[in-house]
Image (cartoon, rainbow, N blue to C red; front, side, top):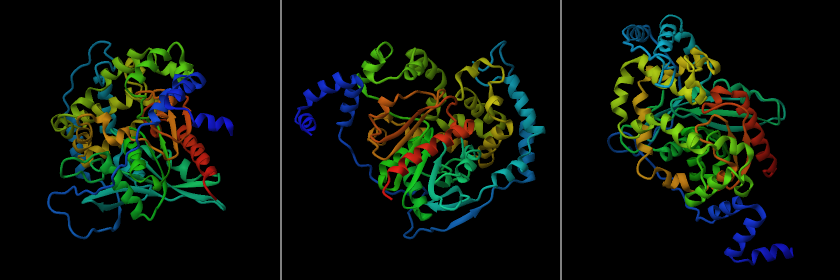
Length: 467
């Protein structure tokens, strides 16, 4: 008790010295970050159609079935047949983008072997619904669990990113809804407005905060008052915004992509010191392996992979016109991300390593969700709406998150965030796991690993909750 009183009586300067000497510079970084004033994220409201918002809102939840038609398939086949290719450079592999020689093989499979009608039946394996929120028809799948005697049912929302879709979660769903432990999940996977079967906003300004608010409204409409959320890519940003907007509704937040940093000069200090004296800044050996050499892994590599982002954050409609008109062009644009974001080394392969982690049926099903709904342009616009001036300094990207948090750090994620940096934003980290393999599309690539990490995180959270 005396020691606690002595520490509490120290002034901030003395406390900084104590932290540096006892737990290293990493402790100081966290201390400084945690001293920043916590802000409140307003819930607000929105209306995403042209014209005035009506006085009453239709809260009906309607069943939805994915459908296809012979005319749709014939049009697709005609467009694939008329594709004009440019020959790849000798030994170009995936360093110039999608290798044209392999693209022809993908297009040939798509045209002659891929069975869209069969994949539609796969999509309809789980119940689909739509409901109108803020003027938009929001699509989601709702998978109820196989509940065993004594099991607790926990609601879970899983949110996809770009260029993915709700279909990314199809392989992980049985692992979450048919468990044998103390709890099992009831899973809701919405499509972000503008993606797939969710209606696109008709007016400007739709951001992650707006998606977060709509998804909270969706869960409320489904009669859930508190729930877990999980996400990667834009799904990580949206679920973080949900935790900031209504923390009382979030039992736990699980991410497979982490947006956090020590900030300013502190980041520079930790990066300069971390390679040689990692323990001083709170880095582990695994952090060092994933971060360094810094310029190659965090600057040059990202510059090579972020051209799409500059286009979509500035003039998405221009490039989108071509993608919306050519199915093979759309496939090349999207599948190249499933190659490189799974593992940068796939750029050295003639086929981009796509079939090492995925089947062509699964990859083309995701493409067809974009193609048949014409949603590539509105999905690209989401970058422009979110990535305005000072994107990294917006309230939803800098405000601390206090809900229980679980972080799964996959080795081939676009950027690595050490736990010591994550603590600067997430104040209640219950688990941080260095995943043994996998990249950006965690649920699609490694559903078993992601499910295991999510389950162990929830188990830790539930064990601490009042009975």
